[in-house]
Image 1 (spheres, one colour):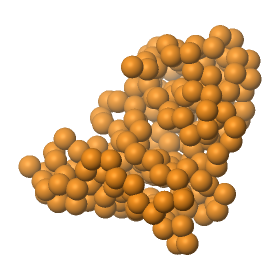
Image 2 (image 1 turned 90 degrees about the vertical axis):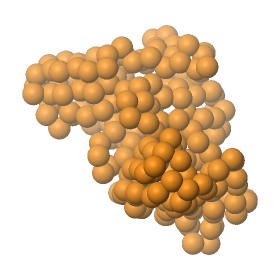
Image 3 (image 1 turned 120 degrees about the vertical axis):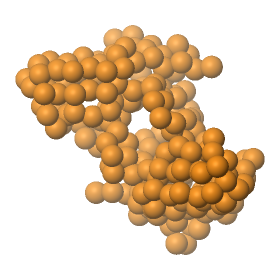
Length: 113
Length: 114
């Protein structure tokens, strides 16, 4: 089974802090994604990466950046956390084929106070 | 701008009932329509998917109906069970070489009562 592991289940940070969310997948998938999930808004794509060191903006990239230095690891960075970034963050990975299913981690619940 | 509209937001059915969740899309370039199922505390997982060259797809008790002209698709769960209680997300994407950029609906929280 594909395993996508997110480093923290819950995280509490203060406004203005720099926050790192880490994600690791163990199936040699080419693609990795970061989504945020908010009630009534569904899942919205923040950034994705289709290869090491390659990244592309999703629908809501403002206030975020990403890093993919190794194939198995994809990091989401909040440069200066704000309260409106309080959310559930989901990492996913998929094979490098069209319509290959996304495999999600169990999420990181981030609270910014 | 929401490109995939999902309804209802929540749904309660009795065991054995047939819940139906509907989605509508705007972008005619979309050519892949998956449904994801999410249990509390877990990430979403692919349940079933359809391409627009067919009008219906069944996998076990789950069926997708697809109406290309109306730009709508729906999920039907036959003989629903309490274990089907979860949040369901429809999604759509336009095939690109090597990856898919899914646009998700807002989700439907389904409760199947015993």
